[in-house]
Length: 230
Image (cartoon, rainbow, N blue to C red; front, top):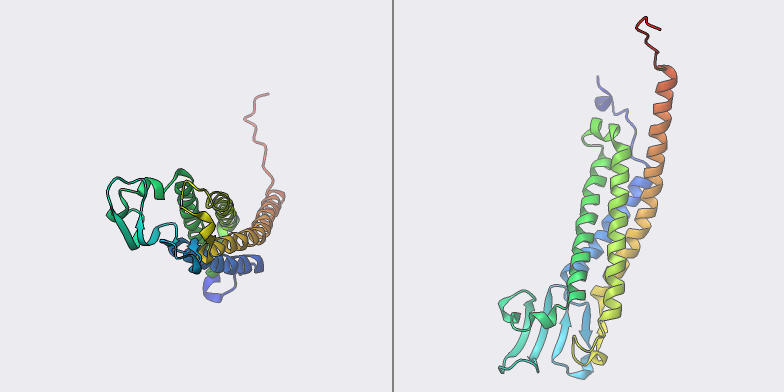
């Protein structure tokens, strides 16, 4: 009967379980922030033609872009890369917002990649590979979560400093940061806490691996082989 059949194998550490759970919660916050169009919203009492926007969508109500030579009116919510916005896309997507799209997308990829590896590590599947390379899996999971936290931190800071620019959305005093932005900030904080917990697990896995390696070397020291010549 194998060790797997007996169920006698080391379980995932508490740090891995707690850190992974926190990453899943942070990932849900990140997914909502990534998909929802409420990073910036206009105040209800201002009757602004701009309503709200997210990373991938803008919403207007009878909005006319003053620098466009044709009398084109924009109404409703549309995907930022849709044909509807092609004539004002350069204005809607300045370079700093493109960088935020990239950072948040990378954070989402790293976060969900770490969640997948963490799930496999916690459930011990496949068992032999997980037990053999757990130190490496722990390091990859920690690095991915830490990278996601860093990308989100940069995205939140850049958006906060640039969202009130007058060469972007007109009348920035009529607008305010909305709940999607705060979801992204909360996700960054949760990813950072999870990264700290997972770092402790990765460090412990590495130390355990080194202890086992030294123990094996003590039990089976390398032998000096001579070919008979001096």
